[in-house]
Length: 430
Image (tube, rainbow, N blue to C red):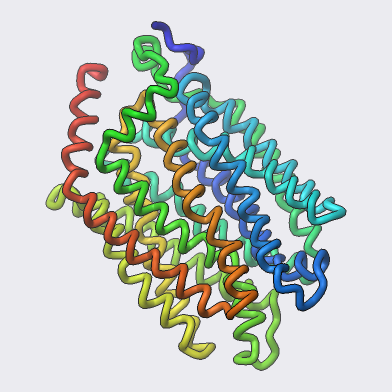
């Protein structure tokens, strides 16, 4: 059966160029996500009365609204990415989420704001499954961990810039302007996507049957995929919920430990720590996974599990050590939380056949967000509204230990599942 993805005769995009563009897009992806977290207190005060015990749960639902549309539509876009040009899908998706983000600043009511965040999720659903599979196709397995780590540098850097830009712009020009600022660069990046060619070759595509929904049972028969997804779900539950609330937590619940608490300043400090800690951890995690893999076939899971195990005590210490010393605990927690980013996503690419790789990332996105950070932000807000934020963070952070256990457990299958995919690829490359 001929694959419906259009074949092009032009020379495929150079790997470095593709990686650079995808990194830039991912950067603005996370800036957009965490601008919302940075201005959450201002949004809450704009739409809810002071003292409303349900206000934090309501604003936490803004993160959930985005994630619900993102995770539900990701499998659909993953199937499309396995059939059609991924650059076209990415370009359209980036344009949609950029315009929807700008619309968030125009929202006249909380309901409209909720709807715009749903639209942001629709746009990101097209980008999430397709982007890492392009990188996986462009680089061999021995380099893939490092290259994907460069791509995922956008998570800590973009998140940090979202906190910083959201805090600065929000405090000086209002929370609405913070959303407007991400629109122009997003549209420029979307336009560039239409100029590039998908790296899939004619020999890879024309002989490949479109997998459709039949790919899902195949994925569920890969043990490493299941354990990795379970670990990433537990991790996403913890880090997604806490990342949304951490500026509000420090400003509103630990503000007495500062001489003159200022939301913009707190966002800037936290953003700077996230950039340094997350950047170092993402690079070192990817490097460690690739370096240890020849000696330890399960290295990607071992590195991920160790990092997540160490993140738990650092997070607990952050809740009880007074500021400014608690900033050191924040740095340690961020460092260890991001240590798995490159290895875990590299393992996801390595154990799934290229023909269904975009679908694999899409199914992973659906599961980790449906059972992860689609639940935790409003849950933290609900607990905090009835108890306090320390209790809420302790409940959620326990999932870090569970994530670590899943990665250690799944390590026994990783080498076999990776070798199986590599062996199947040999005839197609010969």
